[in-house]
Image 1 (cartoon, rainbow, N blue to C red):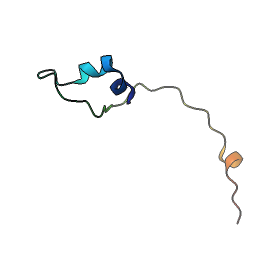
Image 2 (image 1 turned 120 degrees about the vertical axis):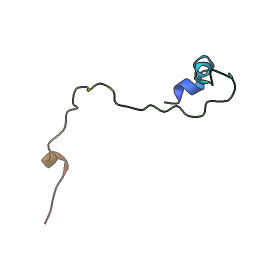
Image 3 (image 1 turned 180 degrees about the vertical axis):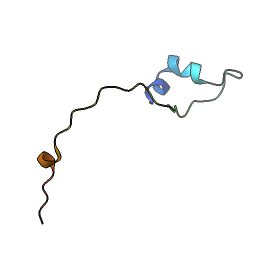
Length: 52
């Protein structure tokens, strides 16, 4: 999530709202989003060969 930090017009709202100074270094996204559809998976036997 570094794209907002690369664009000057998006970087401004991330500054300290009281002082309006400083440089934003990192943008962290916390929490969980909505559940989406599952991704298709191949059977294990197609991907893994076990030899004894």
